[in-house]
Image 1 (tube, rainbow, N blue to C red):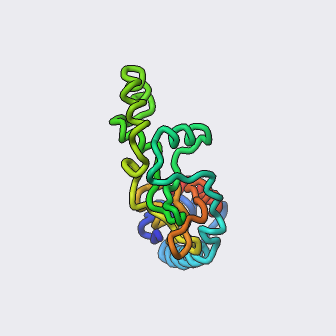
Image 2 (image 1 turned 135 degrees about the vertical axis):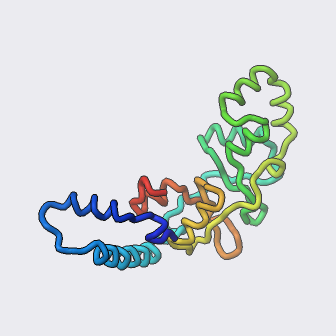
Image 3 (image 1 turned 90 degrees about the vertical axis):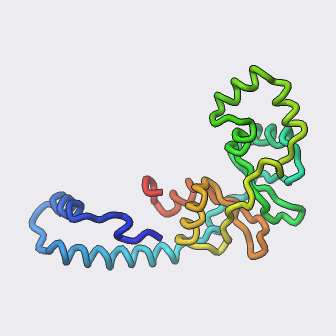
Length: 195
């Protein structure tokens, strides 16, 4: 959870904010800073008691198994317009995640344009790779997950571990319950522009 000093409230910020308020403010910089620190602590406490990951998550629209071939997975991701998805075992425990970035990295490129260029130059190699490579060979593992009962601070911590855009939400046994996107989390707490 960020602290007041991590956010970087400087005296210039206080002066600028005070100048925006019409009229005279009878408060010193020190008193304002103390008031702000108390308000900040109360805001963090309020956020930490808000919704859980389980309340904000969406159902996982599609999952894949580690033994699936990339050909089927790439087709499924394209059809469903997915940028990433959880990889689960037979018991639906999350064992990894597969993202567009994992796919691009596997093909030795950074951007989708580079991928298209490589495909146009050598479509047979790409097809061969898709027919023979499994999800397990290129997925990111272990997956960064978040518990369904996790609250604000824990969710922020999990998102920052790998700069993830999506977190699989799991129960106490690591079984997939849904997916929480960074966008949905930010929207739920009205944090647009902060994370």
